[in-house]
Image (cartoon, rainbow, N blue to C red; front, side, top):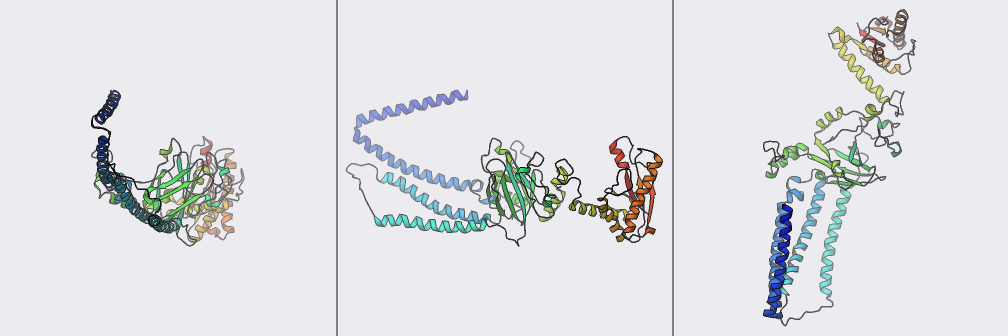
Length: 497
């Protein structure tokens, strides 16, 4: 029905225009061509002036009315350190071009009125005017020079890279259809190397896991965090087509080009909470976020900084939106501590792990820290059950009491603990599963406990502080009905006496 009404309206407008044309022809025949031309010129002149007034007023009013939404004024002032420089450059350019726009618009329509057709008027042809040409060449040249010099200064400020002695954090943004993969450095503060040839379904950005700097790198979920007041350097690259790293509230915009890494450096100066409080001052942001739920959250309450792709990279372009939250350093540190290494959680120990079978330096450090915390808790606990701890990372040769080479890391942690608590006495207990002869298992467990005691005494721990006991398969932690449960039962423990 709506389509039919639209079609009928178009037909009606066409008929009206045709009739107006016929009336104009009849009027010209009745009044005469010259009289008609005189009237037409007069009306066209006045209509040009009227249009000029309406057009300029509408342009200026709409620019002022929508400045907070479209032009980055009001609540949407830049949230980065360098953003004010860009906004200032935009304002200066707007002033100069605005003046030229108003003058040329007035001149265009005023001349249409002033020099409308009238009888007896003849056109003047001016072939050359040096003064006029110098004027309209010199003034734009001076203005352009000022704008270009200011623009070059802004470019050198905004696009400057970080210095060697600067305090900053570096993250990496990899674009693909249709997602951003953001990588943060681990506790070492350095991003690991990458190689596109190593890209797989399980390693989508081609991290080179033979590089130790990659072992602690973090690839968070959808919500990303940055600390306020901290300089951030973003490595930017694309895997497939041209994308664009765009953080509009921070005035950050840089192409992500396949095969050609780019970068951008910026410093957030407003947290998400601070930006929301600024939006709260404006009536339009106190409207319901969901018009269908008038009692729900307001628009300012649901505001988030966002990362978008500013290139039309395909049908799923819209889905590249990611949330960036700017928080205090303390909040960022709390969020960061919850993030887990991509390598350790997704790659470590699997078939495509190039370090499979090796103990990594970072694992040694992590184990030492965890062991120290466990010992401290056990010493301070009044609960007898808390006094028994499992040595998770020591192993023996199959069917023997010979310690594997990697067991030394865990046993060295025990040596450190014994030295830290000189009055502590412990019992080393060996346990097996129920596979094989019980008597042989009992003997093997005793021998393994003795091997641990020997390792400790060889490193200066007094034998009077150590006991060795073998329990064989008599104290299982779980039923010996699956390989997983049997692995739990094959263990070495120590109990603080």
